[in-house]
Length: 189
Image (cartoon, rainbow, N blue to C red):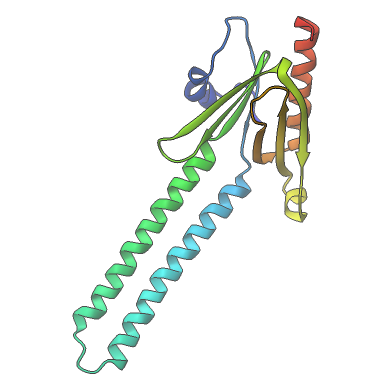
């Protein structure tokens, strides 16, 4: 959770509607452990594909009589291409993971979720429409690394905001509830 992050201000503030007197309370980005999982999985699969292509090429060279050495090279090149494509998709998954954010202001909660490189979903919720904030921490890793799932429940027809890999989720929930209480004092129910 960050306060007045200049990258958030420059990149995302223009995407949400802000009143002139509205102030930024906090921004919530996803925990690094989720990004580490994305990158490790992608790299593991890419290395496995590349290793498999080398093993297949070796098998072709030793077991197929009269084989052309070009086939072995083609198998390795195909493995390299697939590995490069997998690494590109791993980068895209990391980009999507890193750029999803929740912005809490004195009047609203905005969630910006990237679905891929070009598609994103921006949802805004007035603090008056906020019903409840729930934190879900499952497993030992989430407790050790202090991350969890933050669910912001809405009063209206809008879907709840669910934000996985939230760092310090209880602190984030307190910030959101505190902003809602301040909004109630200012505007009433």
